[in-house]
Image (cartoon, rainbow, N blue to C red; front, side):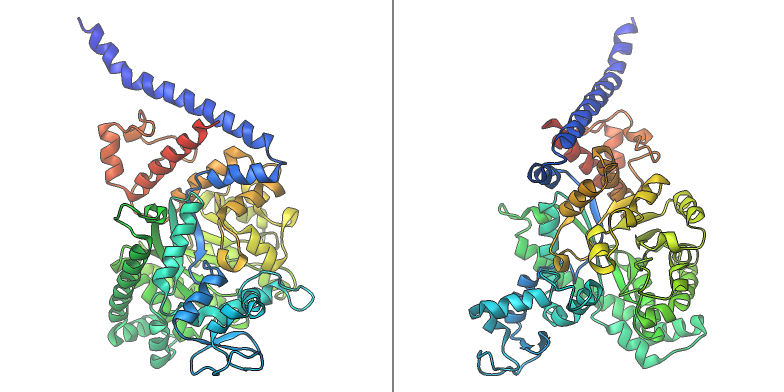
Length: 506
């Protein structure tokens, strides 16, 4: 009499097995198709454009926007251009748009195509001339030229980044953003330096660093409201960008004076505790610059101390964005290891100088054992460091089982997107197949700083107990309850659903 009930009990299990077999077959067919178009760039690009990619974990908001948009923002803000260096400047501007004007209004570019083109070239990597300056110098010089246009337009910039992520079939975006508008750095400068870090933190707390955190959250409220309005979120004509989950890493500028860097780090920790949209913090600016190199050990000391005060706050640090010749050889030997061991980084941005670190093979084993993800930015590493192909450590990270994810870095400045990072990886490295691309997409969400338990039980991407018998798009009641309780798992489930739909085409 119990046999029928036993049969009914087996139905979900059998359904999961059938779904799993179907998924494997679909994945194999998809992989076969990708290999068939590997050497046909147009078809490969179309395939990779449509592939769901998880998240972009290494994306600077200021560098995510194209120069054409910054021109529009500058015009809206009535800014001028210093014609000699093509840097933005505050008004008043010269009255004339004549080519002899030293400080014309940016709007003059709308009626002068050569002027318009020169702004794009100066504010991005388009057509930069290697015989005139290095890619490194041109890249980092762009930010000082266009940043004034961002001041009143961060809402539109977030909208643009979300739109691009949606077009790239991403589900998640972690944007690096110094969202306080330099308030913490100014406070640090006002207070001054104190080698006693606990005492310096107390001074910052007494001087109102929490007030800056609250003001920063209010500022982000306004920017996100502007973003939702621009994308028409919540309306029948909502832009696909509305469906991209956007979170922020507070961006600390490592090239500032120690008192300013420390103040920004403290603010980043405070924001990550008080505002769930800030999921962690990062340390940015050119790693080879004088202050960045001089103060590296001091900055690791800062992170080590503050990690003890805020142990649950997530950290992703730029480390190893260096190459021989940029700095003395000794400067290449310790940034990655120290960022992990002393800076408590859970993710590393770039990691290009791996081979020059002390005991690089031992370091690879350590990174893998600690499960630290490396954010791989192939295009910017080529443009800035002239490191690419077999000279890049990406193959080593994969070989030694280090989790990796492709990322854009500054897609507006580089004039690219995550799809083209995937394309570059496939066209450059024969070992990059569909299975690895899919794994990197999954790893991007697994190593995101979203809260909640993971959908995955282990690194083989075996589903955890609650969802073990479920396959997208259908979730069992237990699985749905689990997904509803975890932002991370919910987004991972979304990726799996979109991957399943994508693979059905093949």
